[in-house]
Length: 299
Length: 292
Image (cartoon, rainbow over all chains, first blue to last red; front, side, top):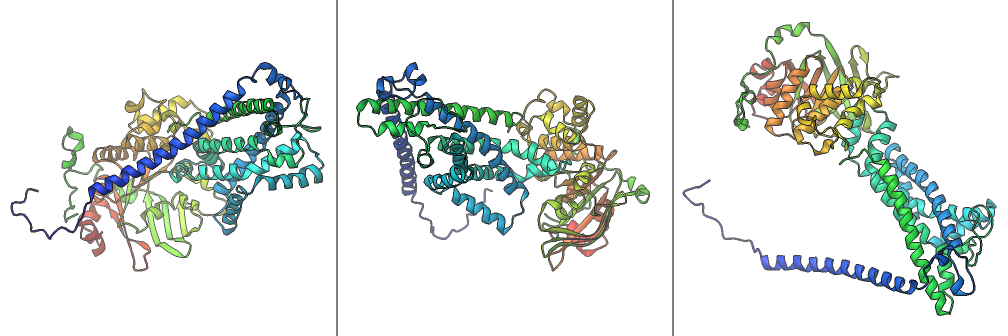
């Protein structure tokens, strides 16, 4: 190493410009910080605003009451139950169907042109405006299958709406499992299903469940397609899933928020807090499922 | 790599350890060479060519793998060693465009015959991979995975312990069976993969460059283990490391690549013969480090 005769070096053609490189790094870091700061600020501002407006109205009476033309007596229970029922049905439908479709596309189907076309189309479906799904739901579920403007129709429509999202997220999660994991299981004499069930699926479960949580949040927050397929804003009884009128939280919020009286704005804010709470509950459920699916997984 | 290697080189790299690390003479018994002709073949390849789509990766291979011996596959990168070893447990079936030509027999049975289930083949011909790939599960569950999927009905605790002992890993992990296999060191992970493989009691263990991701000390532990395991198992090992082939194997198969980029077998022989007295010029160039 310690050469005695130094080699003659050609004149340096490097221009390190250390200061400039460091500066551009600092600028980028600052931009990232500003972006996240802006987001957090918006979120906090929204939450604080909603909670402040909602606080006077949030009580047991509000949670257990039914809508009324007098804000002071209005309650949220029918909408809450409607959203909860829809959430359960949507989850029960999209979880098995979406994951199974993703497993088929990622693990079973050969990498053909048809398969790629299918996946591209599913991605496109995920970007179709929800009102379009409302029209589809109206035509197919409400009219053609004669399910009527019921919770079931709404749940089926919303399931169609979020299935592409669930499938895409699940495919990504499955593809992220290293091929070496599959080979390891195959080399021990596992069948394809055993490889999927015991090796790939547990490893992909966190990613899949994250996709489902996001999709469920979207389904629960949707109002547009449900307006089209006949959700009501004024329902004073608890909805039956397969017949009769129903409402859901976003529609209830929409109905109240569009009224001129200030008090209705207040209960509208209170309903928003309830939506947030319900979303937390459903996400909690998804976390439990995730924990069960991957309970033996230790990365 | 410079010319050397008629003898396995001394291993200065691991000089800070007590005796077993330094082994000038090969660990496999050279007297075994005398028995060579008596040894019966377990796996035989007869006119085997391997195709990926229209590309022939390996052509016209006729070799046999003998029982309870360690057979090393050596040769330059890209000559199809891994492809060839993967024909022996039908792992290549997982590659969509792949197909095998010729006959591969395992104990006389054609592995690619109609009605042969690759799933059943792979339990009897196990495989250890280049990069340790333990499952993201506990050490215990890693070893128990194979027996469980294959419907093992015996005492699982006992089988797990026996497999881990057999893989010389028990003392390292007996107090952390519940911890993730991923948390072990690289060498331990690879021994865990070996334990996992022997837990389903295969007859043959294929090792595809099992030490290429390991440090010299872990490499020697794996080689010791192989010498130990060959009493019960037939081992085929692909290696880039000629010293490893010289140290650890009984039989060596040298492959190289033709102008058509298809790999083929140049020479198969006793390891001592391949390294000291190769019959082919190509083999000599390779084992003496002039090529590859």
